[in-house]
Length: 327
Image 1 (cartoon, helix red, strand yellow):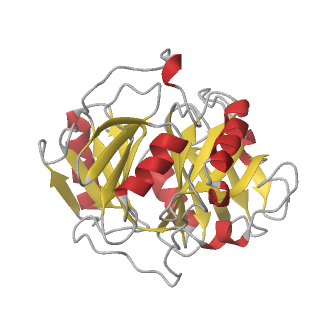
Image 2 (cartoon, helix red, strand yellow):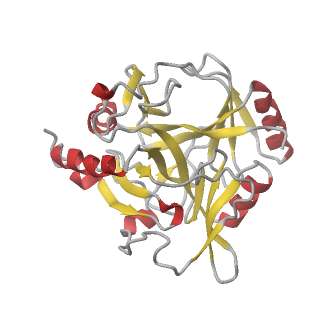
Image 3 (cartoon, one colour):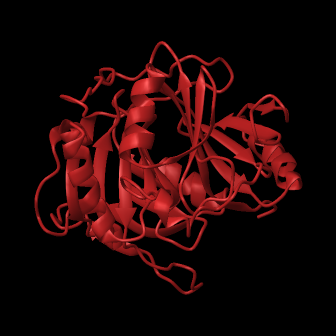
């Protein structure tokens, strides 16, 4: 592999009400607001030294502009551009200075139609890991992963593992051994991206890392006290797949995020992917309780990186999820 993708780095989400989003992500969940203006909010976790890992942009309709990965160097961007173009995947450049705090970026629609972005440089800021007086809400530490709905997981799996250098930690297979879902990583954890079978391409959720399991339970208390109880979609619980302790939330526009803790190290070169049977009830929730129907069918619309237009699917649009009240 002639390029080095390091990790999941940022998500850019379009939201319809910036103030409602600020109340949810900053006041309730405790993300740090690095910077903002009338149209955009830049957020990061407590341990992150880059300027942001989540961008919220004011728009008429909720959608996903791009999912971003950090690469080792500027040279990696050029090699990636040549690679994607050789595969017939049209790339576009966003030059340095056109986006706040981030260097030159390469954007492309991947093999499944998902909007990707790659960058090597981002402005750095103070890491707030030991500024404990600033901890509130979920005490989110950092961005961790993306989970995407695609109609052909095997196709996405093959492309990411054979061409982009991702490694599989766990996967679900049907009786014919077709891959139904897969967890793939670049950093030494369970995943930077997961693919699940469904109507797509769509973003199912963005995952954020928390330092401990109690923080997830504390988050539920904070959300309930602020009137965001209806935003809790699933959990808290433990996945069989990944072993992670999880909590799934829906923001005011319906974008789904996962608060996440408890997976494991995958850096050893002789690590063997863990296979789960599609009919094993413990793969999704180790404790056995079922996910709601919304978790399987609802996800965020993604945009075309070249045209900015929504990539349509047969599924209905996200429903906005307003809190019952906010104290």
